[in-house]
Length: 404
Image (cartoon, rainbow, N blue to C red):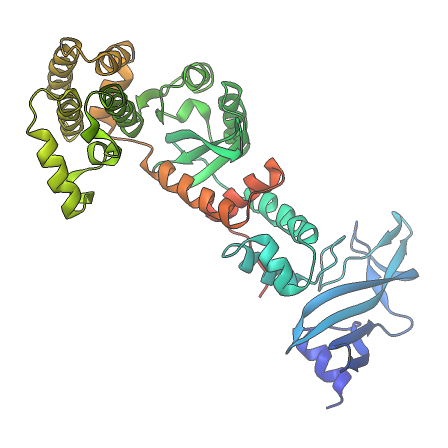
């Protein structure tokens, strides 16, 4: 078998396409495969499929997967056909998509690698610019999203994540049942909920069908949910509520540290659960708790009690325990704890809803950790579009339908 026939078979070419020339340059570590077609070949019109004669050709080059350690390139005279009905059109080639500098198999390699490592690292690995790789990502991710089915979305989690330094955020919407990213959009205002509702409808979903939404206490998110997810009952995420209590405990500690030097550098003793503390940390915490007059110790007890309340799964029992906690908090004389009590009172329905829905943004916290880790490894993403595409790629469970 001559080498041209061998490479034609390896590339999966079918008539009239064939490899008619192979050039291998050892010094350049490069393999060039020239693809052609016999004179008189006819090709289907891209519009109607009618077999038409070749009008003219244009030379194109594509980067292909490496041949062992050598870069490989495909070259071809791509014909334009002249259809009697639709005029002159360039035909698509079977080994690459229109407008790409790479073959389909090379793009599949890129998309496989960028899921596991930063784009810039992949670019250096394959010897291409990251700009070209981002163009590949920006083709496959939006294309895969057109096939996403949101018809069965009923419970949604919403939270913002930092895109870049400063007040620059991306809001993430997650299907809490399927545990996948549904939608990501810049900002963290009420308009993000409107854009989500529009995207939901565009993917066979229904804003009317969303019955539950988990979120933090953001007034903007509450307003957006009320306007654009009219049938959804809001559950205020217990992790964010716990964060409020933790911040209150630390505020009490900071206010007391000036008169109690032993509280210096003890922040995490009060905020971590006991099982997450090291032996020495547990010993120090127990020693501090023996001081009955320590305000931070009192705040810490409020934290433990609050956390235990959210292990209850009965709405009536949960409401009774929360009311008792709030009354004690108001009488505590600890302003940060008092403030939390009034915050819960002002968001009572959404806080109490948790005991029925049992939904939370735990999955979003995990997603946020994954995307921030990817961002850190990549040393940031230059644009919102890049950040969002990577979020979909990592968290969206997309069917990319890559060629094999």
